[in-house]
Amino acid sequence: MSTINSAADNVLKSKSTPFVFSFLIVGLLCKQLQFGAFGFIEVATAALCFILCAAKIVSEEKIPGRALVVPICLFAIIMITTAFACVTDPGRVSIRDTIAYCFTSLIVCSFILASHGREQAYVKALCLVAALFLFFFLLLAIVPSPIQGYMYYQNSWKLQGLSNNPNQIGFLAATTLTLLLIMEFSCTIAKKTAVIASVASGLAGSMSGSSAYTLAVLSTLLLIFFFCGVHWSKRLPFVFPFAIVFPTLFAMLSFFPLSELSFFEHFPGRQIGVATGQFDDVFDLEADGGQGSARLALWQNAFSTVAASPVIGLGPGAHVPLSNVNTGTVILNEAHNTVIDLLVVTGVLGISLFFLLVSRIFFTAYKGKQLILLVACLTPVGVYSLFHFLGRQPLFWIVLCLASVTFVMLLRQGRGFTRSS
Image (cartoon, rainbow, N blue to C red; front, side, top):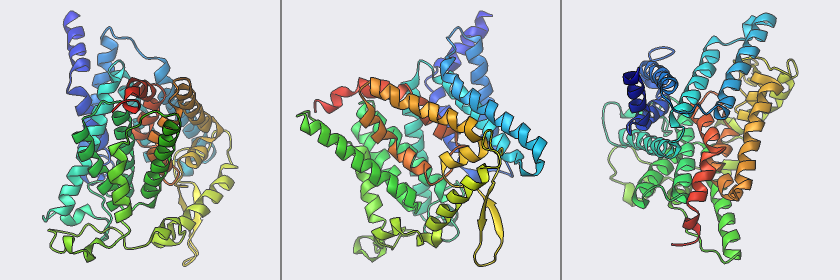
């Protein structure tokens, strides 16, 4: 029995475990590597999750029961809503989405169990691995090769990497920026590493062509300026974070056709220009094929849809109708807003859990006197979630769970960052 305990401890305490787990979690975004509904990364992630859960149970380490409440409750709510939908209207249940939610709950639970007592190592691993993936995608997209064309979405300038969707790249870039800000404010990352990761996050996010990412970056910049102003008004020194500099720079450059600049005239491979519009396009509802107006219509329709089952929702799947003005057909879609989509899928039951988690984050940050700074750090993911549904993304829930305790602890640990050099 002692041999089994020793093996379990070795797995949990190994310095490579956070990086292997982070690699698999981020790798789940690589949809082009799937063969049908799932692929090698999904199988490997599930296997590692079971290994880590078993190791935690076998080891003598404490089980963080309170931290597991959110993912376990999420799983329970999904099961309840699925069962209710199967009884009332089986046709509206998406088996694939149900499995995705259950898989997400398993990953988040496993992450909480494995990272307990080692949260800082896991935050660092997630951040560095996410930046590495973005850098790798950029390398494949810029350097001429037979697979270069696959890095772009449907012959456009939008970077999709191996994700098969530019929005996944925007989400990963926003998450990387959040983790980078946490690490930089907590003084747990070298400046050179922060700069390289910031470049990867900013360039990949801008090349995804996502207006949501641009809004997330600009919103974060404004909140950091506000935090600077508060510190300067109190005559407290403050060092401006490198993490936000390059995302801001690339977000602004993405509105200019870089191909017209002589510096990029002989750039190998594709040109880096990802947009040729103006800043007004970010707020133009008809820009990018009318995505803005379509989202507004989806949000409106979603509130009418949820009225059919307001308490426990309609269950996993796409339920929000959207009419095609050209063909007159109606297609069921998601609302592309995490809060609204959770309300549609899980009803008041699920959205209450979500707001309970968010309230805990704010309360913990307020008690730790880190509220403004934590809100600024979470803004990239928070703003992005308002324009895309992230409820099936393990990374989204992992960031929220880390924010409820770990991020505040790290920010308090690095308070000297805002008082000294």
